[in-house]
Length: 102
Image 1: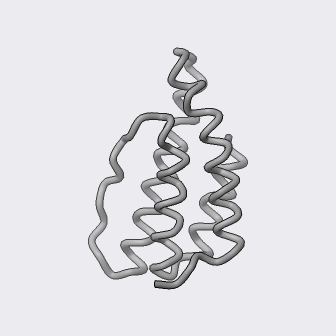
Image 2: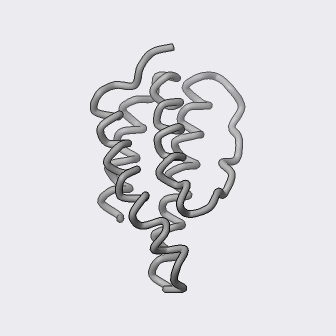
């Protein structure tokens, strides 16, 4: 098992930290603009999972919709899976785009 590339690991940690702040805030209020951000996060999570599946030669699988406070942990897990499968560059680009969206 290869460790994630340092740039991807740093970016995943940055996004996860941001989501650990935003997730509970999103869950505590009903604010229409939050829905677009949550959709962007879930789309990025699915993209990370698809990158890992495609690079690793496995089947694609749907990422479960966990509670909003768990989004940061999902980012970390899926980024590591993508890195281990060899999709480091694409996963890094996905997370940079997501961070700029948030």
